[in-house]
Length: 318
Ligand SMILES: Cc1cc2nc3c(=O)[nH]c(=O)nc-3n(C[C@H](O)[C@H](O)[C@H](O)COP(=O)(O)OP(=O)(O)OC[C@H]3O[C@@H](n4cnc5c(N)ncnc54)[C@H](O)[C@@H]3O)c2cc1C
Image (cartoon, rainbow, N blue to C red):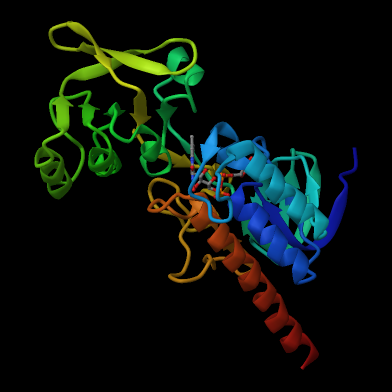
């Protein structure tokens, strides 16, 4: 079967806050962007309930509703939004070659990568059941909802340690569940945890089940993997901080990235090591990982793409 091919100015891969913001700016700059949404149209925020920290929503908004607003705005301004998944890329020559769903070829003068990241979960059914109803993978996003309450956090790396101390400032008590008898976090971060009086450390401990009343979390059953002893902690919030995985496997070996798979961009810009390819949002940000920072870098990516094309046009016509 002959493959269908089209040539466009700007391709946006991914439909989270970064991708939609890039789409809004690229549309208004007349780049006629085409967006492929990927398997999670709207991105990570479609998996959460209330978003209270995105400016412009004084009463807060649900994640899915907010992303629907992003979509409507990008569409109204002219973005061609398509359901599809980028299965392969070839950035070895211009225009860049991108394969959609293994069948369709798109040739793009600029590519904006906004494929985000996925939080790692423990894989318990109860964790999925209460996700957004007491279970969260983001302390900065959701800690506020548990002000003055008792919560637990699972993880042993720098992020877990940082999030535990963040939660400790808001919550009455934080149980920190660490699978082994030591942390993976840096010494400085471990010290911060140890110096925080309302964090109780549970070493050699694993999460057995998250307990709830059908509506929200009421506790967590943990098991000591040395003694086999079980206990149920009374908590209302359960935070999973065992890492994130950037959705960048299709770019591996093609574009510069760090060991975890975060795409490297030049400081203060969204340019990558490949001409005409820009990256924004959580796919390149392991530090902030917020909707507003993703949106901000999406704006940067569209401006970078527009300026790149304008500079090229100038060279060609000069
Ligand atoms: C449970 C939870 C709650 C959160 N709450 C908040 C909050 O309250 N406030 C806040 O600011 N932040 C919150 N965050 C963080 C926020 O969701 C992220 O920082 C933000 O969504 C990142 O945006 P992004 O556009 O970079 O990527 P994502 O939102 O991760 O979107 C990535 C997009 O890329 C697409 N994609 C991936 N691979 C491909 C491919 N090969 N081809 C095509 N498309 C592809 C996906 O389908 C998806 O549409 C929360 C995160 C989680 C998990």
